[in-house]
Amino acid sequence: MRAEANGQPSGCPFALRARDFGGHSALAPGPRRRARERCARRGLESAVGLARHALAPARQPVSEGGARPQCRRGEALVARSTSPIFPSKIAPVRPLPPTALSVLLLASLAAAGARAERPGISREPLPTADGTRATLYHYVPEPGLGPRPALLLLPEVGTTRRAYDFDRRGLARYLAWYGVEVFVLEYRGAGASDWPASFDFETLLENDCEAAFARALAGRASIFVGGWGLGGTLAGLLASRHSRQVAGFIGLQAAATLDLPNRPMAELVSRLERLPSMLDLRLASRRPLFEDRSWFEVMVANDEGLAAAPLRAMRLSLLAPLPRALIEDLLRFAREKRIVVGGEDVRESIARYRGRSLLVIAPRDNWIHPEFATPLVDSLGRERVEVLVLNPLEGARLEYGHLGMLLGSEAPRDVWAPILAFVKERR
Image 1 (cartoon, rainbow, N blue to C red):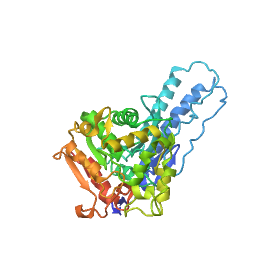
Image 2: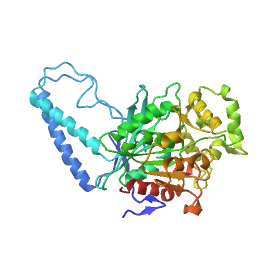
Image 3: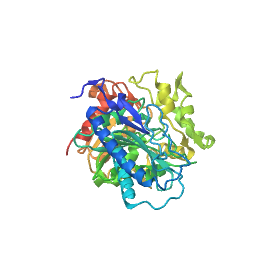
Image 4: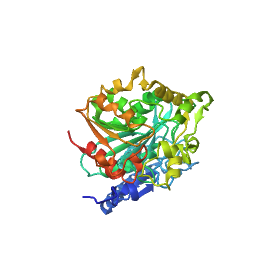
């Protein structure tokens, strides 16, 4: 059994031993895997050598060579670089002999297969139905860990993927270490995705979320879907639309409705006409809300499990700009006290999903209050839903807020482990 310290797997390669190999962040391999990779590499080099030999009489000088993709430390960036074997510009040559063409094809397929099976974290552009590209992060576990369930995670609206993977620590890495294949969507307007001038809540569902679901489902009979906050609402809508392909739904303070939780939010509604076309939450969240505490600290990061030191880094890497159209949607949901997508209340839409569900409720959440999340229990059916309330009376070590339920000091034990058990449970 793998030992844990503070809920974090001891020696977890997703947390501590990620390395960049040619644009892929892969796990540091063990001796046996290194030997296998050396054998595969030698075979590939032999195949490429034969192909080069066949090409030698007619090959012309290459005008541009391939460049190694650039990666930031601690983050897997899968860059599309020019291959040194297949240069981007080459003078016309005579047709390849059949033998050389076959060898090149086999070498290309072997290299592609090796990349696809490599454990680690990769990033890929995600084309959507309207032509805008979102981003999908893929966490592939080590082989040999038994059945490999797949889980698609959706972040909170207005955030990046960092809630699931901050500073090499997070739910996505934890689950992958224990054998779960994880996909994390980064919406348009955040991180490496395209930044269109405007989009609304329904656009995220119909384009980004649907494309991510199709990509994660490819080659599988079913997957789990989950989300945080309004991302949990979107995940619930996906589950209701694709119930036969959804093995289970996980809602992390998933909103069934919204309201105006405090006076500053009510004032924001009254000043809607003065909002810019794009609101940078990283800057807006610095403004004082109560006494000397910022909007970010009060609304999102208000629980005991978050240390003060990393809060600034969390705010800068976690929050993303919001277009005015999406803000108008959220404020309309709050004024009407219901979330309507496609002309239907999401409580009615999500009620059509009849499969397994896990709802995680954070009592100290000042953004999605518990009373905004608990109606989903009735929508999903009390006999089919597991409810995890994060307070000491229910067995949690702390009373959690919106961000602490994912990145708090005790989140691995109180939140991540129950999610792992839910996904791994065989039904």
